[in-house]
View 1: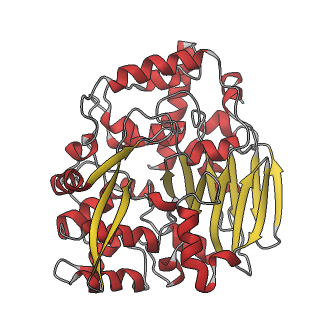
View 2: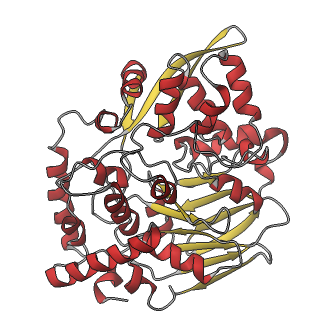
View 3: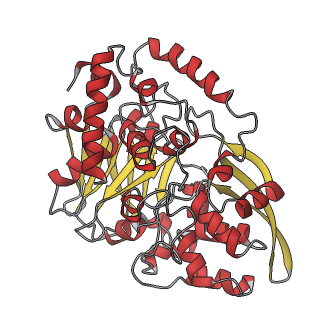
Length: 435
């Protein structure tokens, strides 16, 4: 491993074999970090390393959990059909929780004979029965867990949609929902995984100068937009319906770990259940999914988005199932029952399809907004790929043109020559991730 990268990793991989219920710990295989740097670059190589065992690989980048802006990212890499490799981004605080639990990468292979929950904390991984998530009490227990009651800081959950055989079932980050639109939830369900919990119990001794670097850069980024609430919607094609509903139902906003852009809105809404009014709320991390529902069904989009998160169903899939005319109760019934079948990315070409080729969009989970990068001469693929390798939220890189690759790489090394070499290796790794 390059000397500069040592300060950004535990250099530990946890391998969970569900066939044997064994957990093994090992260093990152030699050369992987030097070759592919981290994030999706290394999860791809680990997926190849465990080829033939149907792996799911969770991983961090070097800047995950660091003082760099929006250092929240964790990547989940899997192959739904043995031909396609998908890299799903997980945001909020998932990446730091994995890295600070003592592991940079978690590899899950095999299939458990019984439903299980994987608990990652204190430099250990525990395989537990998922009885608390089964049977009549499962909905209540799952709801409490997703809201952060008696549970770790980050939890990945499969839902009823996965158990109903829906191909577009997602692996949700609890109440936040998911940017998974390629069936990772369905894939985890086949392994009998009900939940993966992540609890930070330590930390990383990042370089001391990173603290001041991060403080200065965060101040500059916060000054770019006077009103940061609608930045994502303003740049999204077809984002106006989305924006109107956020303005109407907005209660508060939330930022991911160490991020200057609080782009996750919390909306409060009123719905009817059996003739009775019910007040609910929903977090909007999935901008693409909510935009599809908002354009199709503006009157009940919040209610349906909440139901999708609760069931673990991709909102784009839901939009294709329910259409525009069905009454709300019928639409909710369809979401709760789902329709078994292959994974789907919605009803057809999405607004902004000209921003990025479909095959590249799919390689990154189909959930990152199709925002045309604001940086000059930058492509969606180059900005998202850089983020997915370094461990930074890709939405930040798409919306902040002043945030250059050198800004981020300077956290890793003060040596300009090394940064140039590092950037070249990142470009090479990106070509392997999304050719």
